[in-house]
Image 1 (cartoon, rainbow, N blue to C red):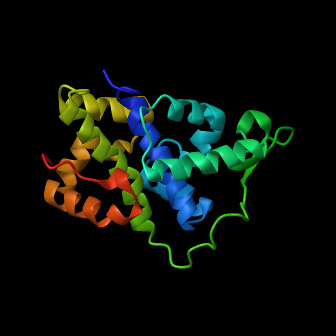
Image 2: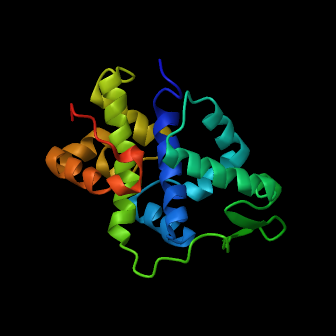
Length: 200
């Protein structure tokens, strides 16, 4: 037993990493494109609009505490809600929606940092994939998951993790544990979410 159990918990990290990148100056379009190219069933900002941004904050409020990285994301989402950008149902969130034309376009938030000019698309994809795999390992380490196969099935069938990887643990195996750990450690500057358990 733990907050959000497994699938909701790793999805939460996927969504938060996307917001973290937005706040670093990585354009929303680049994040969404990277997620699709990485093989995710649905890109993170589109997911946030579908579930609604207030619901995301409600999930946040169930957590026992927030890291500084999570707090930054929380504050940004709160600002969007105050501005009336609550998601698809309201017609605006990370996307602007035209109900009659059934179209949507990514919204450009002028309050965000100046867009990063040189975007490493491979790093953006890795961060979205690896953050879910890393937290899946924490779930296994904490006993939330009893065996890796449950994580592989749950991540692909439950939350649309990139199917070609075989799931979160199959992906770590494919990459190689040492290489995976080294990459995660290289992402440490992006926030506490990248701390690697010593057991890994």
